[in-house]
Length: 112
Length: 113
Image 1 (cartoon, rainbow over the protein chains, first blue to last red):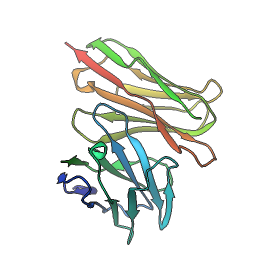
Image 2: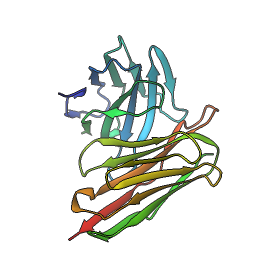
Image 3: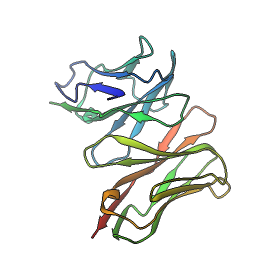
């Protein structure tokens, strides 16, 4: 059974139109992460939550926001997507901070 | 600034052969990760190495960590085609506020019959 579920798998948005990506988990893990991976590049950690505590990476643009309303769900909001934001977005969870991570299948975002 | 260098970036192997992927990092870290990624797919966590001298093995893959040398290795034993994928190492920066988890560029492994 899928343990980390990302929706949708593919998302197309227009330049400047806000978009929200969703991640849910059935593992009851404390930590949830969001990564951005552009084509043929390494993943880049955007931010993570330990429970309700939000931890932003220093170089994550303000255009990217996140919400974690409860243990199971975490959302990535892109307020004004630009062409450079087209990427695969990966959600992951771990039981404790930066321990072994479990990844969802990813959401591939296209910006037109 | 924490930098993570992997080499080689591309590796073509024959089935049955052994090889090692290297991951060097530039500043103190308290843990190092190895991931696998198949083309067009998500990441899969392979290993988390927490201390100097740590060694972990899963099947034909073995990872080790030397924190004094700031070096981790991923050793592949008797490669099989199913191991073809891109392998990333990532290092967690200990303390500070910048760049908590930094990835290497990845090693694209191709195992040929």
